[in-house]
Image (cartoon, rainbow, N blue to C red; front, side, top):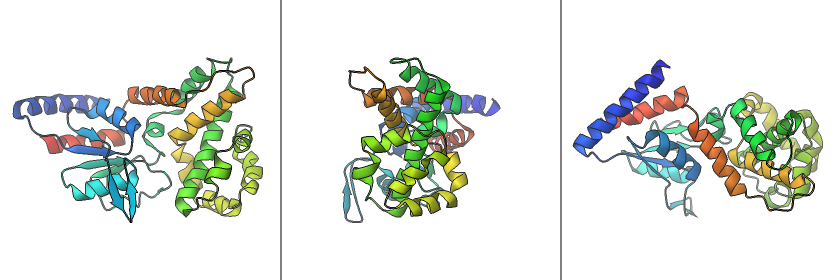
Length: 273
């Protein structure tokens, strides 16, 4: 509580100084719209939150956003800061040498960093009960599906193997299997169905603790909720995944900043004074 009071006082002080000096605010580069929405709410008085527009990295042109582009922009601008998803970089190796960039570790992304279990389950419950009375088993199945899908995506990023992207990870049969799993043990048949299943198991075993702490990708949770709703009988209307994501981000934005984010906030504030 003391750190929250101190941060509030510091924010008021920064606001007053900026009004008096009309000082140009530093830039905080983020990967996407969800991060920008959340950081703008909490830090708009000490930093300008921006999604980098374009860049050329390793011969690949990135039009907007993304981790590599954020890192590139911060490296070029000594007066800027960056915030990126941890994703599969469990050791934060990508940003270790750049003290002006923070990642979401130990969580996969900013949303999962801010949402605890209670907030996550309440959000899922609210989304499901628009269509059908939910129960704890339904909610746990959705969370488990989001975690498993996240694991597969993290492995894909770690290995650089894109082979399963279009023909397996996003098809209906794959999600039907995911949404019927109550535990990681029940995922064995899914692992067996993937061409890189054995390598994925090794990745999971080598990073078991980190994967547990990472929780889930925000996009995987939204996809799991939408896929679950589509399985409910007599649901005729289409599922608006963008609307689900916006609700999730608004809930995350209302959460108190963690100690790690408060320290990042204070680091940025110190530059503006």
